[in-house]
Length: 155
Image (cartoon, helix red, strand yellow):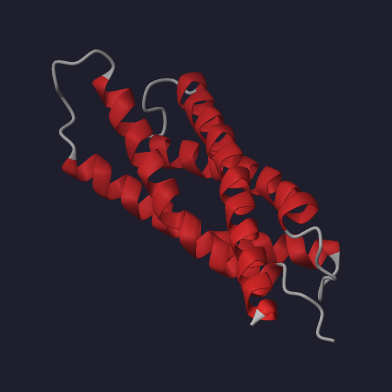
């Protein structure tokens, strides 16, 4: 029974650390997202401008999240895979989160009206859609990271 409690405690600790790392990743993602939107001329790539900014934010944040999760969240693991293999697996696994993020962002942009009499409404709806998409992808990313990317070596 004590082993089961210890394992549950370890999973809880890992999930909390994963979420803390994820929160830093959200900040990185949103900063890069906003910077790309700001740097590109208004709708320079048409409707794809927002998605290009989202992918840029995703690429940078996945890299920072991998490093932090590898060094902090799963630092106590005797890893089954070498570092570069964990990195490509992390990116591959995070693609599911990106798919969810872009899907939610697209739905938010479709459902939220383009014009409202609020200052900077269009920018706010893009940021909100991206943030909601990131939130939805968090659970999928944890499951993939925990059980595939940062899998412990079999004893």
